[in-house]
Length: 233
Ligand SMILES: *Cc1c(COP(=O)(O)O)cnc(C)c1O
Image (cartoon, rainbow, N blue to C red):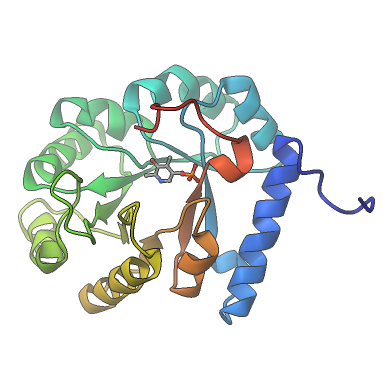
């Protein structure tokens, strides 16, 4: 290994490699590397390991469970006021207060009841997380998210009934399908409804997502290693 090559055996090295790959994918797509934000996904990752990523300069992170996020992030955010924390997992209405209080971006707005409770919580707390709508691009019955045909009316409902601005869309493509068609679909919907941010792409497919216009890629395994089985939220 040459001295200026990142060391792929530690968090800082893997983070550097992932950032290189993001830059290469962006350039290949004719985009500015800094038009793609890396959301480092820290579900199941312990505080001291997260601290290594923070020490390497990473500031944007994602968690999928509210309780787990509360056990780790208040202390880290206290020390680093510029951290941007994304909720990328399902949100129940009885957890909205905790979500709005901790997260800077909620990527999983997906039904009227959640939109209503978020709006109430924003009014009560005067905290203003950015909001994305999760889209169930594969129309999988067991998966969260608004189906493609209802995104436009759901965003209008968020805006007109609850006064919520939606800044982006996110998707998790079906495990067993070519992700490209889902990335393309999400990008097309975003363009149609006039939403700017696209959260799509994970460890296995982020370069592809960037070629379809991802502005946020959510990457866990490629930075922090494999998670314990069955703990994938
Ligand atoms: C866990 C998770 C990721 C990261 O997945 P990796 O394959 O580990 O990169 C991205 N998005 C969501 C919604 C997740 O739950």
